[in-house]
Length: 263
Image (cartoon, rainbow, N blue to C red; front, top):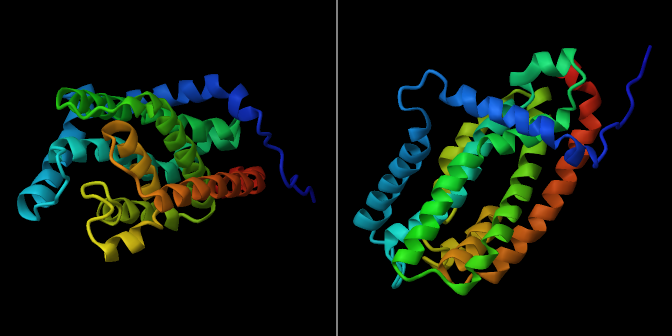
């Protein structure tokens, strides 16, 4: 009986397989909007609908205090990040099962399927981020540290790469992850300070500071709007990102040799 190797994927394959990942990402983009009457307009309509919803819920009804920053600008900055988190997390568990023929019958590097998933949801991030920067500039709230926005985007990509590595690996073996992902996405927008400040109340802050996405959001809004961040949340988010990436890579590497059997 042939026993598969414990690990065969190499870290350098993340870079060497980028052309394949780009091709897969473009394929998924085209499939998403194929035979859609509005096509790429959904890149604008989906975030816009979410912005309207959170504005009505958190500004008009609960009257969230965002200081001298208009609520729409505050929420838009949070949605720029959350849109990418939401879209990526929603499809990450299907990165391998939805490509089962490729995984089973071709030598396509499996890490490219993970990277391709991140690439396929970049357009919504670009659209909402551009709108956030424009809104902040028009209202006079775009700070000098906005030059660090690329670093914030890089942090977001690394964080979601770790999430996708872990979610895709576990979903290949346990399909419960596919059903669990939508629940996380639905609850996440309320359990993450996307539409309200982290310091809304002490009780809320003490809990949500340990949500790793909170640290990302705090650094994100500091860069886009100049809002002083909760440094504990930022440090926790940064540390969690490092642990998540290493753990996700470990799990992916150990399970990769059996993906063809699982899917």
